[in-house]
Length: 269
Image (cartoon, rainbow, N blue to C red; front, top):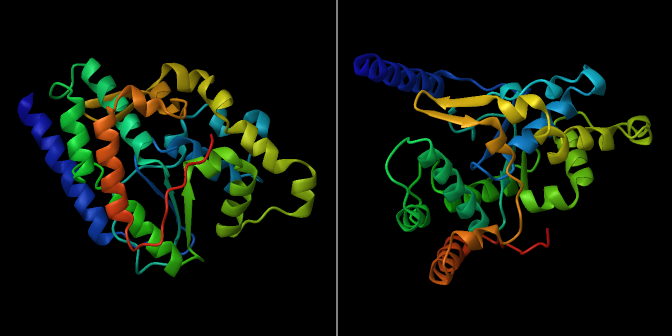
């Protein structure tokens, strides 16, 4: 059994490397880049509903019976600097919230009996050092920020906070970036508002597929679909971080942002 598990892991790594070296993005391709637990599932649903708004009716929409990540496949892909595909980068403008989400996710994994014992402090230190299965969060944010300034026609740089504060404006920006702006007729008929309602936390989190099914991230990591609908609350990170940890992360954040022109403003959400 151990042999076959190792074989699957090697095969999966081979396929990922093959994709990274041989994949050729097309101008019509759409890629969503984000760190886990930053609003990714919500934005996947909004993108899918926006670009397919003329294909599906709202009463029989695929999002009513399918998990959003299944509609927007996940994969490890190469650097897109040389391609003309459209990209959306979503991040949290408050890194402390991102840390809280990550620690909450690790708690769930440990509860399943997977991996090493959970340690808040050690995982927090690794996060601050940029050591993670998902890459260095702050380096990703700054990198995409700079790239979006250089390529505004193909990169949309978003924060979870602005998406939550004014989804109507964000969905319109998404449609414009993707070459499918809403017509005056669509807006007058409330198409944008219908998409937002369909993809809302209240709507998606209460669907049977998102309440009872599971998502197999890897062979040894299976998560409940409902864990992807954890409602972000302001200040929730205080349940995981001490005052000293908060002060340290603030310093790390300021150092990373220095000279980039990017600031993390605190929005009331």
